[in-house]
Image (cartoon, rainbow over all chains, first blue to last red; front, top):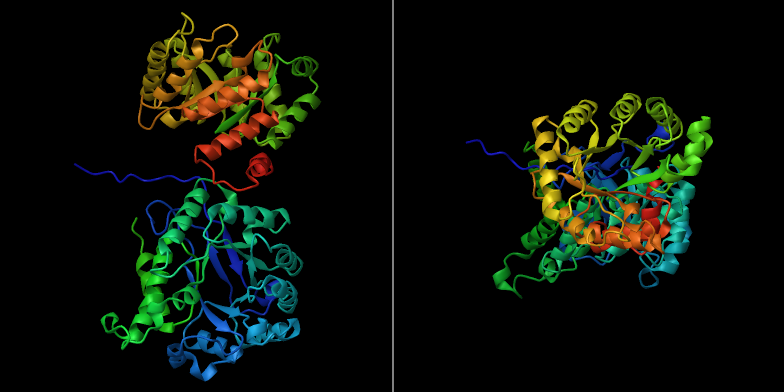
Amino acid sequence: MPVGIQKERYSSKVGTVTLGALPESGGTRTRTVTVGGDSTMPFLHFEGEMPNRAAVAFEVPDIAPPWDESLKRFWGDVWGDPAAWARKAVEEHGADLICLKLLSPDPDLGGTGPEQCAEVTRAVLGAVGVPLIVIGCGIADIDNVVMPAVAEAGAGENLLLGTATQDNYKTLTAACMVHKHNIVALSPIDINICKQLNILINEMNLPLERIIIDPTVGALGYGIEYTYSIMERIRLGTLQGDRMLSMPVICNIGYEAWRAKETKAPAEDFPGWGDAIERGTLWEAMTATLFLQAGGHIFVMRNPEAVGLLRGHIDQLMVSNR
Amino acid sequence: MILIGERINGMFKDVRRAIQQGNPEPIWDWAKRQQAAGADYLDLNVGPAVEDRVTAMKWLVNTVQEVSDVPLCLDSTDYDSIEAGLELCKRPAMINSVPADAPKLERVIPMARDHGAHLIGLAMNERGIPKNAENRLALAMEIVATADAYGLPMDHLLIDPLILPCYVAQDHGPEVLETIRQVKLLATPSPRTVVGLSNVSQKCVDRPLVNRTFLVMGMACGLDAAILDVDDNELMDAVATARILLNQDVYAESYLKVFKNRGVR
C-alpha cells in the first residue's frame, strides 16, 4: 500500500533581500547577494521552494581585535588591517559577504569618530567586490553619530547596516532611508519585540524588503534552543502570512561561539575536552549548522575551517528531497 | 478569519437607491471603504425590491470591480442572478448561499465547482432552521456529502449554522456554537464555518457589543469566516485580539494597528 506524505501548504513566504549594487545600479560591487524567498520550513524542499542559498559573511574587525589567539593562524598577517583582511577573506576563503565590525568607536578600544569609520568603510569597499555589512560598536549614542557617516560613505552600495534596537532605531533607519541601505533589526531573543521593531522601522517608511532580522543567537551550550524556537516561530508566522515577521535572518555566529569557554579553554585545563584548536572550530561550526537548520540566511563567521564545515552542510541540505 | 463585508446590500437604503438609480458612487464608496478596512470578500446583495435581479447583480459586480480587487461574495436566492454575476467576476468568488435542499444543491454545487468558487451551505432545508446542533449537523452532512459527490473541494465549502437574533431565539446561541465545533469533524479536510454575524443582534440595545461578543465566542469554537460590518472598529479590534489569544498571530505592541492596516495593499 502506497504511503502518502502529508504536506503542509503555506500561503506566504520569506521576503527576499538583495545586498550590494552593481555599477549599472549605481554601486561598485562586482556581484550582489540575494537571500530569502523560502516558501517552506527549512530544507523541506518537498513542501516549497528555497530559491537562495544561505550566505556566509566573514567578520572583519576594523582594528586589531581582542579575539582568541588561535584565530591568528588564519588572520595573523592581516590582524588590524581591515582592507587586507577583507581581501583575504574573499580571495582565499570565498566570502559571499564581508561584515565590517566597527570596534574602534568604543571609547575603551580607541574612541575613533565618524570620519575614521567612513574612511575604513571606503577602504574595505575598495578592497573587495562583494557586498558589505557594517555593524556599529553597539553603544547607542556613538552608533548614532558614526553610522550616518558610514551610510553616506557607502551611498549607492546598498549596504546592510546594523544594528537597530527597539530603543534606538530612528537614526539608523533614517540613514538607511536617505542613502538607500538595508537595516539589521536586533531583538533580544523575543519574538514580540522582533515583530514590534519591524513595525516601527516600517512605520518610518523603510520597506519591509530592506529589513533583516537579528534574533540574537546564542552559542551551542548557551541557550541555543531559545533562539532556535524563536526562529521556528518567526518562520511559521511568515509562512502563515505575517508580513511583519517575513524578513530573512542574520546569525552572528562568530561573536557568540567565541564567547563560549569551550571554544577557547586550553586542553591542559580540560583534558577531557580534547584538542582546543579542533574544539574551537567545531564549536563555531556546530553553532552555525544548528541555526542553518533553524532557518538562518546570513551567517557571520570568523574561522575559515568552520565556514568550510558549514558550507559542506549547506551543500548537503540544499539537495532536493522532493 | 475570513472577513466578508456586509454593506453592499439592497436592504440598506443608500444601496437600494443606488441600484434603482444606476448611480455607482455609493457602491464605489462602500467597496473602497470596506477594502481599506481589510475585507477579504465583499458581499453583494441586490435586495428584495429589485425586479430584474440578473441585470442588477451584473451591474453591481461590474461597478464594484471598477474600483476594487477584493473577491466578491454573491448573495442571492436567485441562482440565475448568481450565475450571471459569476461569469463577470475577475477573481474566484464566493456563493452565498444554498440550503440543504437536494434540487438546489444539485444546481449550485456544480456551478461553484466549475467557476472555482467557494460556497456557503446553510444548515436548513425546506422545513426551516433546526432547533438544535444535532439536526443542524445532519443537514450540514447532507451538504458535505453532495459537495463531495460533485467534486467541490472541501476547503471551498463553508457551512453556515445560522444564528438567530438572541432577542427572539436565545436558545439557538449555544446550539450554533456547538455546530461550529462539530462541523470540523464531518470530513477531512474539514469544511469551514461562517456566520452572518449581524443577525444575532437584531433589535438588541447595543448591537455592536452583542456582535463582537458573539464573534469572539465563535472564533473560540473554530469559526473561520463571518459576514459582518468591517467598518466597526471595535469589532475589528476584537477580531485582532481574539487572533492573538488564539495564538493565530504573534503579539506585538502595535498589533491592533497592524491588523487595521492589513487592507492597505
